[in-house]
Image (cartoon, rainbow, N blue to C red; front, side, top):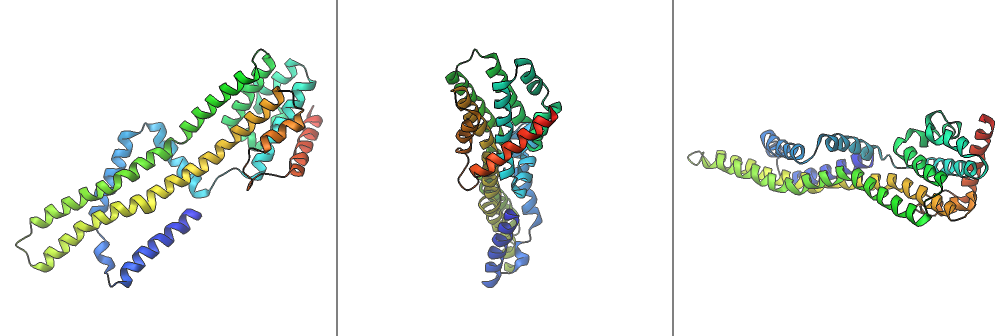
Length: 291
């Protein structure tokens, strides 16, 4: 919704200001200039990026338009499933814990936290490091280095749409110039026409420059930035898991380890200690009943 409101304000102010100065809106209606600029930018986007990135860019744009960032419930469920797993690690046998992490989709522990279970990448991340903890040979600093490397890889992959769109945004002003040059070439071929016709052709050519700059800085670049913000907030969930499990491996009790994870959440989004306590107690009750 924020993107739509922003675009409406941007288009309204630019076009409204142009009309208020006495400009004629029909002069800006140059569909073939749009075809040249947008078609070339789409083509270069397809050339520069693999199909997986192209598909993920569409997905990332939908997330940005819907502002699909983690909510307080997402944070609470992530902390809740970690608390339940740490309790299991402390009190249950290896086989019992492995039953949860080998098949999380069928595990009552994970089923108590459906938001986490729907995030397959996060679920696998949690299960993989719990499995390493169970093995018991790895030291905390080694696990931390491995987690940092994997989180960096995840961040790099998730931000590919941002970099792809930023590249398009950087290219759009130049593509606008390409469209303008082609328009000037067309105008040069009509030098024998009346000044009214020649003026209209030159104006149409200049629209290409305007569109390239406008689309770059007022449309594509802001959407790319929004994608970056949304994806980085989603990646924060992995940092929560990292800090919580490392605190547990270093000897903290489950409830104390949760505080290490909770403190990595932005102060604007961070759930209170009471909310975390209620969530973990609720999850523990569900897991106990299922067991």
